[in-house]
Image (cartoon, rainbow, N blue to C red; front, top):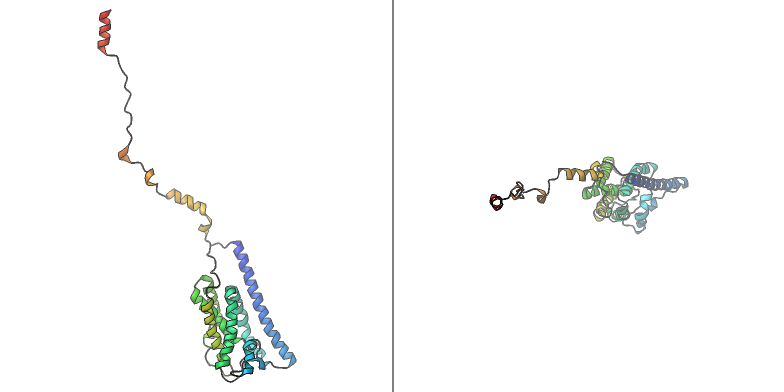
Length: 254
C-alpha cells in the first residue's frame, strides 16, 4: 500500500494542528492555576455548587479551575491526549460535542451531585474518552477504530472512575461527562467524512491491468469461426478443348 504524497502532507499538518491546539488549551489551564497561586486567592467559588443559584456560574468556569497543582497534573495528560485525538479525528463533531459535554456535565452535577464544590477538567476528559470510544463502535472505519483503541489503551481506567471510589473525588462529574460524551457521539457520528480508501500497488497500474485482462480474455462469440458454415472453395480450373466433330468436318470439306 502506498499513500500519496499530498495525503501524507495533509495528515502531518492535521496532526500538528491538533497537537498545537491541545497544547494551547493545556497551557491556559496551567496559566489559570499559576495566576491563582501567585495572587494567593483560590478560585473555588467558580466551581459547581449543586442546587445553589450562585453555583450555576461553575457550569461554565468549573473545568478551568483546579484545587491544587496535583489535581491539575492528574488531568493534564487527559486534556492534552484526548483533546488532540478529538481534534485530529473529528474536527467537525467536536464543535458540537465539546459544548455539549462541558455544559451538560455541569448541569448534571448542579442538579444531582452531592453538596460540595465540584471543579476540575476531569468531567471534560471523561466525556472525551467516552465520546471517542463510542464513535469507534458506531463508525467502525479504520480511523475511528484506531482513535478509539488509543483512547481506551491510555485511559480505559475511566470506565471505573464513573462510580464512587475515593472520597474527595467528584465521581458525579465523571459520570455526567461520560453520559454526555456518549450522547455527543450518537448525535455527531456522521458529521465527519470517513477517511479516504487506501491505494494499493495494483490500483496504481491501470494500463497493465487492462493489457492483462485483454490477453487472457476469451474471444467474443462472433469472432469464433463456425466449422459447419464454411465457404465453398474452388477445386480446380476447367480448360475447354475443341470437339472432334468440328475437326473431322473441316477435314472432309477440304
